[in-house]
Length: 171
Image: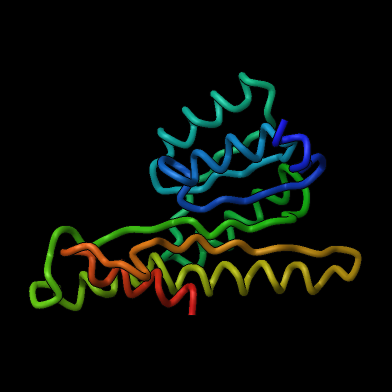
């Protein structure tokens, strides 16, 4: 099987934006490969449902409330994840939003800030927090995975700030 070459036994992976879409899917792939996963998102009901599915299938999953735009929430997410499942080995920055179907001329400052605070600033913030944790423990290493989008190269009408924020993750 393809999963045989992708062994995550004993690894702890924290995933932001894990209540649906790619984040939810990543959690399934990673638990199938043997990882412990901590799922974070604002929609705790969806997180809890996904955690139940993963645990019922034999995985080891934890769900936590996470607002990636709030530094206190981000720090609490990492603290609680590590308290429950041990040091995080991999951080997956997956949270992402868009401003709605608006052209760049229709977008206002609040739309721009909402998208950039979620899709870009939170990646920097959580990565920095994670890096400090890994650096403080010389016996540990870690990996950060930032999820971008094809729209970084080929934008879709009405997704201007989303496309720019995802392109910034690549550059």
